[in-house]
Image (cartoon, rainbow, N blue to C red; front, side):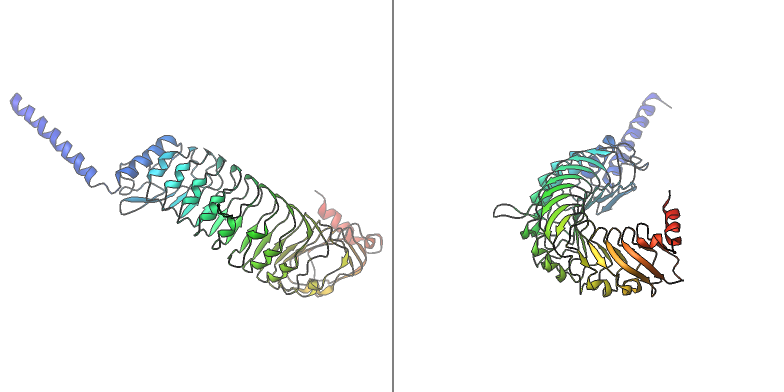
Amino acid sequence: MSVDKQVMTRKELFLLLLCFEALRVGFSETDQQDVNALRSLMNQWQNTPPTWGQSDDPCGTPWEGVVCKNSRVIALRLSTMGIKGTLSDDLSQLSELQSLDLSFNNDLIGTLTPNIGKLKKLTTLILSGCGFTGKIPQELGTLPHLSFLALSSNKFTGAIPASLGSLSNLYWLDLADNQFSGQLPVSSGTSPGLDLLTNTKHFHFNKNRLSGTIPASLFNSNMKLIHLILDGNNFSGSIPLTIGLVQTLEVLRLGKNRFNGTVPSSISNLTSLNELDLANNNLTGAMPDLTGMNKLVYVDLSNNTFIPSEAPEWFSTIQSLVTLVISSGGLRGVVPRKLFSFPQLQQVILENNAFNGTLEITNISPQLQTVDFQNNEITSVILNSNYNGTLILVGNPVCSTNITVFCQLQKQQLSP
């Protein structure tokens, strides 16, 4: 073969390769802007899935965790991948992104970029269980379609942005287990607030450093809240009467704060409630009347300073109860025997009260597992012989009589 023919052959081969590359790029299923954004993230992150970078077409030759529609990336689902790095501005180039789940990547750190506000089609943002720090950018409140926001178990600080009150489509708001401080924002003439989130069903703000009073204006009858979880903060002042307006509530947790004053009578309006936790506050006055709240499954009113009283009437009427906890509640008198017959009842913890007389546990729930009356003034016990759960009577006069076997058994069971 002549030299000229060899040269022509090489030229033809080179041209063919160029054409092939052009065709390959032309037939790529992934928008080039999205490809560039993903490659940028891949270069900044460690421990991305093995399929990342094996092709230039994340949609056509799928990259793990990347979901596409019409050549555009609409979701990143990268939970528990062990990814390390930060959330950079390049993420905002995924302009069609609807869902972002980076949860439980402990080594994803740094602050949230304000550019996250450019993801205008985002409906779901799940960053729980990462290592993010700093303040939540105000721009997060500009995402018009956001319905699910979970930022729990990070190290976020600062105040909860009032701008979140503009997220009119928000269904789930979970900011639990961070280091947020300050008051809960409510709307004013110039600023939005959480009271405007009338479509939101979940407020999870527990285990933070939030403080101040809960504004009465936070609650209104238009709200659809089913979970209000505020335990483990530094809230003070009275529980607002307006809480009774939110009749959709199913879970109300206000424990481990510094609330004072009486429990508002309007709480009895919450007839859909199945969980009530007011424990470990400074509440005073009468123990709340829960009569008629017949869906309650869990009640904890422990460690407040209620006026000493006999067991309330609802001890004999709320048949839905599974767990009843009132430690150090100032309760006295005889324990209503009907309490133990509730069909779903599993735990009764009424330690450190002043119950006296005979503790009669005869007609019992088949589910009953734990009965704790330690440190009361019980003098005798009548116990159903079929009961094989735990009975704790340490610290009662009954332990010095001829049925000390109960106390001895419990001491053995409680020992490490």
